Length: 122
Image (cartoon, rainbow, N blue to C red; front, side, top):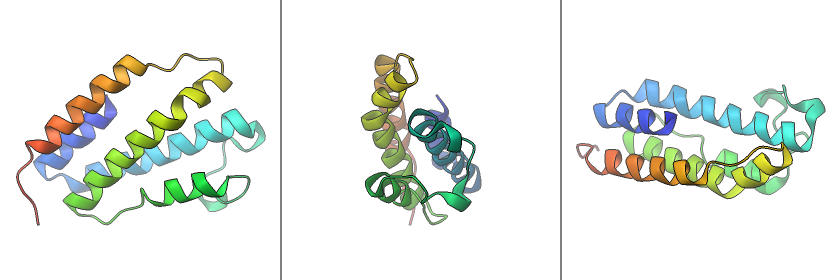
């Protein structure tokens, strides 16, 4: 549901709040990846992001770093959601959890609707 709140922030023009959310989601994804693949590095942050992270995952995370503008933040939100949709089930399985596929699809629809109804921004 946090992704939907981020989309609502974007629709209202609260770009700093949306940016904060996206940064926290990147951190959460990075922690989840490390927890599943390199538990000894699970608490490491962005200062050592390249260590032990496969190049494709590093590139995907890099694509979510954005400017403080509506279009860039919207794209980054959708990119992070897509990345979690692709990689989340494997991460959940490795951590012995169930990935909430149905809920994720519902949130994706809500985010798309919120961004579609946002006023056009330059």
